[in-house]
Amino acid sequence: MTLAERVAGRRALVAGLSLLAGLGAALAFPPFGFLPGLLGYGLMMALVDASPAETRLKSAFWRGWLAGSLYFLVATWWVAEAFMVDAKNQGWMAPFAVALLAAGLGLFWGGAAALYRWLRPTALWRPVVFAGAFCLFEWLRGHIFTGLPWDLAGESWKAGSAPSQAASVVGAYGLSWITVLIGAAPALIVETEVRRTRIALGLAIAAALAGLYGLGALRLSGARPPAANAPIVRVVQADVDQESKYDQAMFESIVHRYVTLTAQPAARTPDIVVWPEGAVPDAANDYLTEGTWTRAAIVGALKPGQTLLLGAYRVAGTTETPIYYNTLLALQAQPGGLAVTGVYDKFRLVPFGEYLPFAGILGPIGFKDLVHIGDGFSAGPRPRPIRPLGVPAVQPLICYESLFPGFTREGAAKGGGRAAWIANVSNDAWFGRTYGPVQHLNLASYRAIEEGLPLVRATPTGVSAVIDAYGRVRPGAMLGQGVAGVIDAALPPALASTLFYRVGDLMFWLLMGASIAAAAKGRGARG
Image (cartoon, rainbow, N blue to C red; front, side):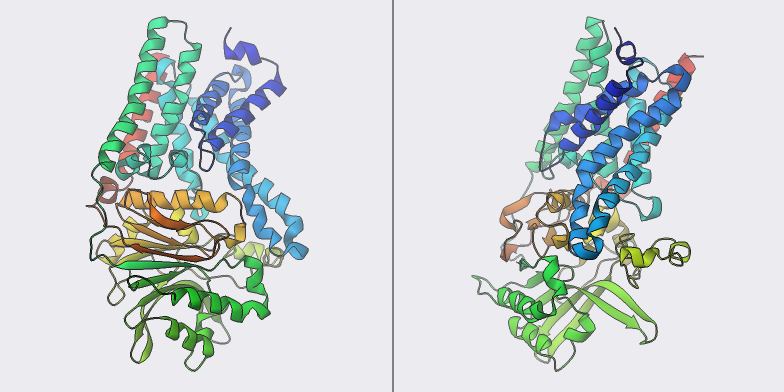
């Protein structure tokens, strides 16, 4: 009996299996790491294939949307924590925001399912076509309305593991295609009754997995430690929760925590100190002004020649029309005080968090007041590396920007040269001690793999880490959630430019071409 026959007319069973498919795929991600959950893609494909012919597109969309909605509910529920920072005014919005986010992102899975069902691929081509339809909508999810590429299927593998190394060749979108194909193909083994076909499919899946693990292990075998003269980086994690930043009485204590940790003795004086996004809860224009006690405290904490990479917000424009930027400042301690040697303004802003999309429509109806976004931030120029005095060229990624494959590659093209490392400052304090920050670390680490560059990640409450160019946390170079302290580590070496760095998403689109060819062959076979 086929799956279509088993579920015919049983809507509750179909809904339950669709939700199970999404749950399985979500549990494959760190911190769960339940890789058999990748079979959820196969279950989703089989359910879409079993859609009744008379309502095939509607049924396929519904099944895909259910799977996607639960997937994103598991993947993003921690967003609710941001509303609990000001629970009195915003707490009531948390369940609605989480539900709307999950349901909205689930539309992409529904669209992918409907497209796949419309193509009606035949026989053994189905997983190839399914991977293409699914990943086309994943790519759209990462680009429409600034994009939200959180938990792309290819990032299910723990960053730094052997399978994750394929991202250096095909990027996260290409690895998503491979991952979905591997997860979907076993569905064919279950349904076919031909023993020889089952064996062939099993061997093909085993070969694909062996290739992922084997080639990844080969790449990792070439890893080398940091050079003896590599710059020493100090990452400061002061364990400042988000609520404290709104308490004016805590301001002096917060500054004191950062400067005390910065000045902490070390076996070898750090060359670079990194503070997280929004470390000091005030405009940098104010607390870095000459003559302020805050500037004096920061100068006093730094050694001559040290560079501080400071996540901050700054104000430009005029008093009447101020412009706000989410910024990373490079400050060097010099004999005359503190010199600004580099400025990077965040380019990709968080919709509804840092700016209001469609402000001309939503603003007049009071939506800005509802989400308490204020004047919001303005986007900086397109990304490019900064080259602070005495510091290897660095590409800053501020929080949300670390989700986007190719962001650093784009910066190199605009900035006239490749960075030597990536500095990722983030304010994951918004999300408390959920697994959101743990997943954010995993996703950010994929940018290191794709580019072949080390990545230094600083957050106020964890997880902070120094990550090598293979996406692995350096031994002893991580501070977990709810911990105050510093990481002192040599900056890992950059690798030769990866294939992904050289060609970007070209390999992904070649894989998509294989899906298009498979879809055309299937349709041609039906006449």
